[in-house]
Length: 542
Image 1: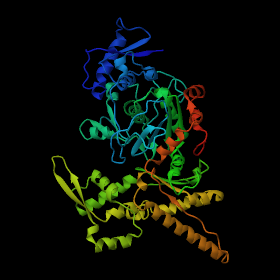
Image 2 (image 1 turned 135 degrees about the vertical axis):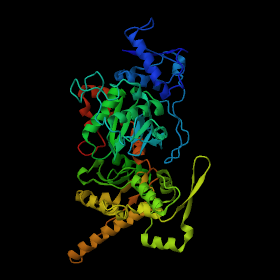
Image 3 (image 1 turned 60 degrees about the horizontal axis):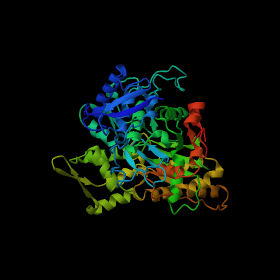
Image 4 (image 1 turned 180 degrees about the vertical axis):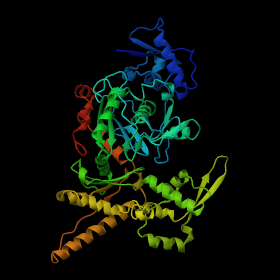
């Protein structure tokens, strides 16, 4: 077994412990040691000469740069100062999540990671909220590439046969380059800040719920684990989430990264919709802990309507809507530009969306209210660098922006079906024996369902559709009265991070580890083992 030993020395001065700027120095030092072993070297040791209080994150990045991915699980400090690592990252207040500084558990409990198109949520199972919430973004050297440009194929492990390539496959995009530029990247809010200046391009590895660039996603996960959660993956089980209808190949890619690159102890991949159902149990409206219901999951990039029966997703009935949080932000921005407001930036549009928008019961009546009462208009103050402040008028967009869920034609002619019609159609396409349960338990999940009165309007519109169909059926049957159908939309306090919280509930159960696949099972059976998980599952596997 190769040991990575941290030896203190004042010779190498880093700009700051663990900073990305120090990565080239680390790689250069280790490369010299490997090529010219000194008296402290032996064939079974890789000695990284580092400044005291070096961060373990830097050492792992060093290994990635040297193509030694399989040795990540073998890093250990050799003395007290190395074990006494300074803080890597602290939970900070994000614009979508009010987080106070939380205590990271020193135990070896399961970890939950819910990575969405817009934001990623990370934390320890059993907690009621994630420890970290930050944008699913990565900034790398070079131009902006949206989802990341090239390298969207799954990287295999360097210099090591891969289950996916059947032997001598190509080496990893991350480790085969062995260049210092591969270590110079940021994630989350730091990525957005870095990309605002020259030299860095901003990338979003997940688009419409699906991972498009595995190279960037692996780096994103690496920083999330080592810099933010600051844990040893081999000491923890991971609960990851996936969107509905996620290709089984994506599960295998994820397993290869977590088992081969990060050497995690075990993992469980759960469908986000099933976890969102579990999260709704905190609502006072829920009388029984059922895993049957219709989940409306609307985040930043996509909105899914997913029917779930007894914990199993009805894959043939799932519908996706190309309207989500990002589209609402763009719509607000276009309204600001049309009015010629002094600030119509995307950031201002997003702030207005989150602070002022709500769902109205009748759009025509709402216009009349605003025309009669100018006090309904608001002023949003935008602070610019240098202390300059700009006032932006906020008017009709307060109710027009979320209205695109119910009248999408006001935003785009490409998609014209209102959300209530989509939900009703999804349930009608599901097996008849579960429809009553699907109508009775319509669960909202995701940040784009948090608008005031969103659930009330959705329930009213779906109820109108159901009642109209029942009346038409009664007429066709000669006036025979039916018992009616209960329609209930569930809103709850864990709605914003529903899938993560549902995973937190599952991860704290005593039997959770028995549901997971372990590193030993992965090594014996290969990546295909993660196509199926016990207890909770999605289409094509459970």
